Amino acid sequence: MRYTVRAPGSLGECLGRLLAESSGRTRKQLLAGGRVRVNGATARRADGALVPGDVVEVTARTPRAVLPPGLELVYEDDDVMVVDKPAGLLTIATERERQRTVYAYLTARAHARQSPATVLIVHRLDRLASGLLVFAASPVAKRMLQAQFAAHTVERTYLAVVEGRLTRPAGTVASRLLDDAPGPVRETDDRRRGRPAVTHWRVLRTVPRYTLLEVRLETGRRNQIRVHLARLGHPIAGDAAYGGRTDPFRRLALHAHVLGFDHPATAARLRFVSPMPAAMAKLPP
Image (cartoon, rainbow, N blue to C red; front, side, top):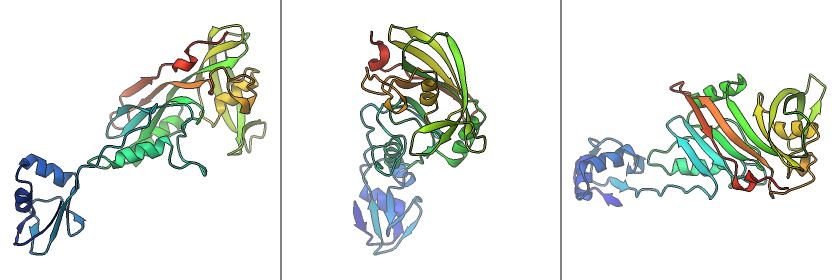
């Protein structure tokens, strides 16, 4: 709606005439939500003075951006957002793909809100993997969450189906990883270049050709789980990049199952669980 002022008065009085069928509360919400502009500038005060010739615009409510199928918003408040990502969707943009990412979809959704919000990256999940991710809604929340990741106090548990049967019920893999992105991550003995990485695993279920593992991250390097399980001689099913020879699920059999952290504003412990995807639930023979 666009209106040119004909007589002096306040913005509140003008809105009362233009939106006579709306309640006073609705008009206040329009102002608070930044949906009223005077001469092209957002106006938030009803007592602002208007003079003849001023142009008042009231914008329609912007439709809330819809998340794509498979991407689920699990939790949201003023500080954090937790999502469950499907396999095949990037966390953030690459040189080849900038639009179809979790970050882009969440940002579009945040900008479509009545009061636009911020979306900030805290950590990432492999494109080929699925599961839980947390994003921050403010720089302060981002710093506090990333500090928890650096201190290894964030609970991160994955489910992985690997090729073959392990001879031990549980174990730990520790090495140094060299990340020459965008190429494969490699292990190295060079302490000046590699970064320490620690992965804990335990067997949940076995069948003749595959094993379901619960994997807990102590550190969070790129492709860490994939590299470490391949080092054991049991690459993740569907992971041709790190030695996988089979693809029974037509996807990387890796899922971010549990994510736990302290809320950056309240310090309350939050813990989220994403069930194993249906495609991975039944181990092949």
